[in-house]
Amino acid sequence: MNRRFSTYHITSAAHNGRIAGEAEEAKCAKGIDGIHKNESIRRWQPIHDSHVVSSIIAAYAGVEASINEFISRPAGPHQQEIRHFNRNYPGDLIREKPTLKKAQLVLRLSGVDVFANGEELYQDVNLIRMFRNHFVHHKQQSASNSLIGGLSTKGVGNNPFAGDSIGELDQYLSYSASKWAFESSLDFINEFHHRVETSSPFEAYEERLRNEIQTDWVGREPQW
Image (cartoon, rainbow, N blue to C red; front, side, top):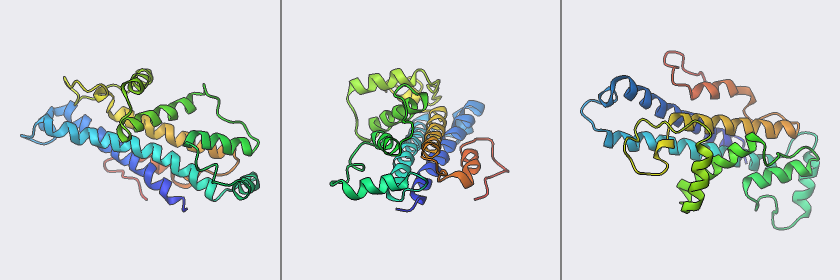
């Protein structure tokens, strides 16, 4: 597997998040007519919200892909431990695990520190996973309650398109949620690779990725 697939996901997370942010800025600055004259918010809410959802799904997909890519092509001083495990244990035991448990197993096999369950970065990515699962797998109400409780601590519940919407997560479909999901996912990927003592797959162009999600970049577009 080529590392570019994780790059596609992370770039998509940033790009879709930025589009949502620009829509929010236009609405807050000029009202709905500032986005597209004579078109109602009923049209623009699903367009805006779909970019946020796409951003969150892509952010976690970037985490999944980057971990899988490392397992497929391990690098650094601990690669032999991963290759040995892949060769000697049937059923592809690493790949069958959920992504975060998979990452923890790789760290454990490498003899380095795993993420503590209470570690903020680990908790953030787990919350992004729950957010993604709500849209992809339509988890039940109990999962949504846990998700809302977590999101309420992150300061991301400010979707200006939500209005009087009764959807339980509508207020959290915001640019700030996209930005948080993108940055947390990228930070997690970087920290995972740091712990296994190899370079992040995004090292050469991380600054361009982080610029991609900013909404004030008109006239200074990232050069890819």
